[in-house]
Length: 439
Image (cartoon, rainbow, N blue to C red; front, side, top):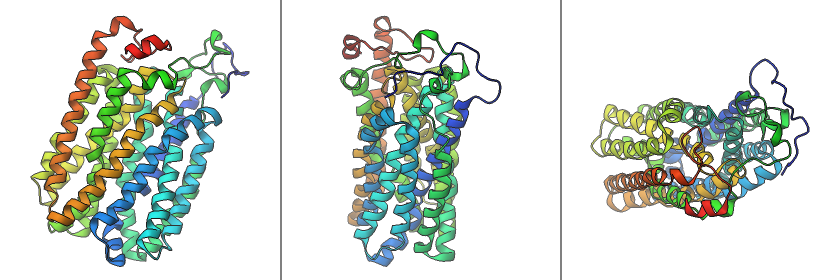
């Protein structure tokens, strides 16, 4: 890790666009390509199930494996980004996504799909996601929630654009050539835009938000907790529990909404648009709720996100036609997008920037476990019962429990306000191990 910044000065930054927004643009593109390609899986599910004669549960396991890797790998890619820089990890990740999709196009068995898509896309997204999120957090303070939301809105836009594109390519070219085309897109666009990622504004003689840097910080690392102290804190335990429980149902719609719609008589061209509706809502949630939470406070807003996901899932349980499912998809997307956008900023508020990528990476192992189990379990439940009702209702309950945990954390924040220094966004940051254990 770099500990000195020779370009640092107290001079005002040069006029023009703040470099941090280019980092946000790079992060947007990386999340657009990585998650956009990953979330096309639902469009391929029927073709894979038919060509390989597989059950819905076994095909769903492809997505679960990839999801486990791209969230679980953050525990390694985060510390590597803190040490080597986020750009290298992002470029490597985009190359892996492209290769994984290209190799999947040549698969002759479902096992080969597990290896190509599951490992290629899973490792690729995992190598890039947490590093680019951590990089964005360091470039902003006053507008951190907005910048973080804008960066990860690439996931929402990717969900809007890529599944319909994949469906079109499948109809025109077949699923194999569709995977190959997406692989080329990931390698070219993803790698090119990943080059915009930079780890720390101090490397360019800047402070966060484009402000002049503080002279006393010339040889200091960013303030914040060590990974060891962060993971021992009650705040981290609460976040981990909420994310773990919520994630059991978090990605069930991304895999099973299209098959659910097809089972209820919705045309395939319309069914895939439901993923686009999640993308529209997700983009809105990431873009607008991040800025709103900067003013309202992120812990309370996170509570609202979990509650909103639970209520919207109830709409899914009661819907069978296209328009009812579209209402669910958009509403779920808004709350899901807000949840994902706020989480990195909340981690930065609580634990500071010293090891932000590593701490986010450890936190996302909770999402990895839930993603590994949830979508595939929903598929196997359907194979047994020929209904999605039980997985949907389980997802409702999981989000309500997560909301209760976030409510308890909000009360903890209020009671511990006298024990730690408040940050402008309403969280607390410290680097003292005693405070870490108490908070």
